[in-house]
Image 1: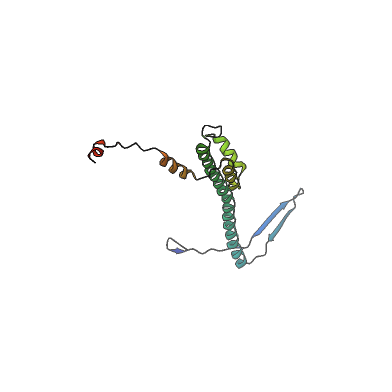
Image 2 (image 1 turned 90 degrees about the vertical axis):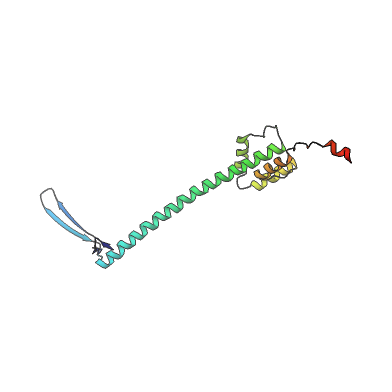
Length: 160
């Protein structure tokens, strides 16, 4: 690394602790303790500890981020299921207690979490109509909208 045109050299030293103690009668003692690493070993150890620091940071982010992503995706899937169930009830059983009841739809999807195929099969068995995606029901509604009747030209019929 260079800083302001000068080379910067990292230097590692061994870890040493100087401990001075004074007892109640005024006797002073000194203790020097060291981990016994050479400068080269201390350099390798410092680099290794920095590497492991960043590995732990990345691991924590991946661990907790995984839970956050799982929670987000679970909530999103439950919301899509509720919309699908609401659209189904709106087409199959209009003007019933289940038509438009978001709380019931969310509870049903929560109850069948991980088993939504079983839920859809039960609904199909009960009502005899296939469960479709929300956008498929909307397409069907657009097809069912009656078009305005075209006026017949009575004059043309008279000419024939």
